[in-house]
Image (cartoon, rainbow, N blue to C red; front, side):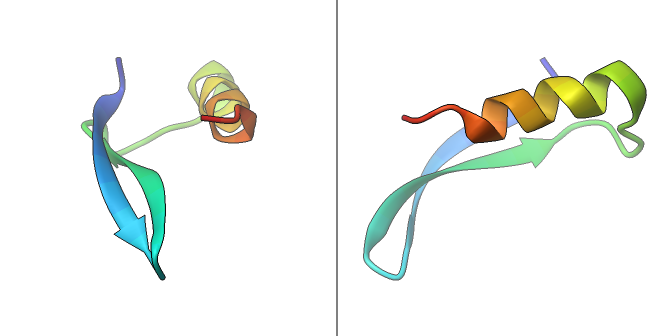
Length: 41
């Protein structure tokens, strides 16, 4: 896991908020994050 996920609210919509534990994300880690962002909740 590269971070912690929290439940939040953005302009009245429930959202997932990910807080990264790593300072530098690149390569395979970046691609994994992009695929997470594309997934519907």
